[in-house]
Image (cartoon, rainbow, N blue to C red; front, side):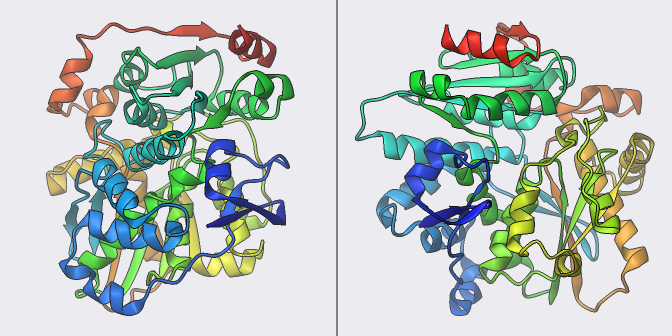
Length: 433
């Protein structure tokens, strides 16, 4: 697998280089030179295959020149050892539950797969690497559990102080060992800016082998194509048209879906659901991309004012906005709408959705008002996190949530966290020390 930079299509690096460098020197993002086409006959047989088996088919098409089939199969079976079930909400609307992994968020797919890929490449080398990751909520927990006690890897997680849920914070700060957490006095954008500046600081890179576990790293996106393919396999015999509705913050999840589509997965359209941080819906409507400081919302993992992965989406469409509009719609919703949607779905369907998933459900309704219904069409809303990660929201709505066992265990662990301002000089001095 060869990869180029979104800022330089003539660049060519191998998978190992892209995984450990995370970002090209020109500050673009890595993308595969070729997205291989999945054989249609192979997809026809997916109805009888498991999620790990379908994941292997997709991964092997991309990575067969980098990792042996035996090693790749072992990586997938170890990393993707939980299910992604579909919950029917209406006759043509399904919720894809992606929160059945260890951290109760969809990012377990990326975090666990990435950690095993890195460990695979590090087996023959005697060096340590330092992972820096910024999180607005769920990424950090998935990365922490994915990399916990992985030899040769130290992880530093930056999160905005006071802007993640209590359970999300416990998942970041109670691991110890090779995982450390820093609460930054600022927003997620501040955290992400510190990480990006660190990667482009020559002195830091001379001292440390820095890499990222954010969705800017291509090895985070690759495993996210797996559940798009697995969902198609489950619904292909009932529906002719699939529309994936993805709650979007940094836009890595929906970018992965579009990579799967580029590989030949039959998808009619994608819908990006956002909160008040409506940079992309605004861009699709006006053609003006207006990055700005993020605002805090109930759906905190989507509180992103300049989504990094959107450049990957633009790159896949050759930066042609009219073409992108034919394949992607986007809708934004405020906190009051999100609260109302959570309550309505619970009362009418006896089903709990987190604030992020609620934005996806709202986007289905909004899209149906704009686009005429097609026969045999299914909307699939990606449920990105378990509702229990947002206890304050449900307490306010008077809804009781039964916490999974792994959450109850968090309360008994010691919280270890460093607090820091959002100055790069302070962050750099800490890393250098």
